[in-house]
Amino acid sequence: MRDDSSADKPTADKLTPEQRSWNMSRIRGKNTKPELTVRRLLHAKGYRYRLHGKSGGTRLPGNPDLVFAARHKVIFVNGCFWHFHDCRVGLHAPKANAEFWAAKRTRTRERDAGQRRQLEDAGWEVLTVWECELKDHSALEAQLVHFLDDRGPTGPGGA
Ligand SMILES: [Zn+2]
Image (cartoon, rainbow, N blue to C red):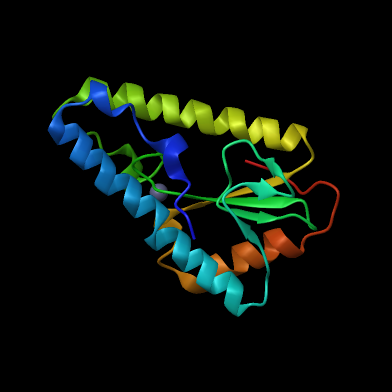
């Protein structure tokens, strides 16, 4: 399995060594443990998926972590800090380089929203699973099953 996270990597040459190492540790965290938790759970439930944005030969916007091509659904597993989640971890503002992080994380959040719109415009249903939602496995499982098994044309909400 290849790590296809290059789209998430910052332009390293513009960062101080501290920012760079901090970045890398955070990004690696996003691409391993939370994603693996979701993958293991889905695998145990018998769902089959592809990894990292591929559907046929086409790359999907944002390289979704999990792609369910037949269902036309994709799942992103997002780290709360990096993707600026509206939760305690996501809203925590580092004191060092505060402006740098605020700008960077705002761009990430805007980019995420744009990619979600592109996917939805192309007929994909999108679910974002947040790192902070992984602790409660039964709630997570219910959320995933509900998303994947829902065949209705449009569900309520969508946020
Ligand atoms: Zn969160």
